[in-house]
Length: 288
Image 1 (tube, rainbow, N blue to C red):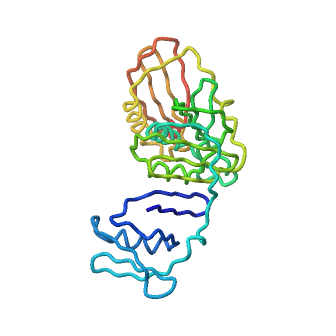
Image 2 (image 1 turned 180 degrees about the horizontal axis):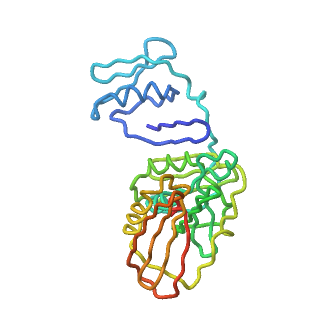
Image 3 (image 1 turned 120 degrees about the vertical axis):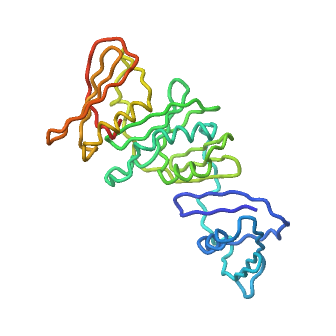
């Protein structure tokens, strides 16, 4: 059985196995009503759907529960278009999910004057990799992944809502996903799911201009230790979003320091792998 739902911005289609062969009739039924029925039934409950008592009604039975609901013809259900856009790339669901998770913190979620940043930006790189980008004008995050297949496609920004739906549906799936892109639509096929969505209108920021070229300075540190140290140092900051945290780096050590506006201070020193000249940098701790 094919099940399809849409809010006209994103559409999800999937399939499920039937215990008995149906009559092939398609219908449109209220999602909230059916979802409310199904979620309150036992997990192993069997559900039967058949003609209802009156015209334009459908009966749903499960155990001792009986429901008689209105439905509409399948032709009344809105569709976001059956034409599939050109193929863009194929990639493992786990790989794409991990890339989206890494950049999601940088999505624009509350600056309404920058709607073109509300989502994940995808584009190909000269190296043959796929770039997945999140940027809100203050933060930028880029994950570069290797797709199984890649063709030339026009850069696209997938809305945050669609990204969240994909991440929930795929979970830890290891199946391959095929992504199709046009100027205004994306179609993602993976397992039994087909996700169709509008793209974000507008031109994404040229984020690469604000990323400095990689120099000769490399620091290796344990990520979990750095995070815990930051949490301890910023415990006195009050509003972490407005507090500047300084990093003092020297051979084998990194000192994290915070001084608040009212004169309080906190420092912590970490062991790192670094052998070079001393330097210091200041960052907003919430970004780090």
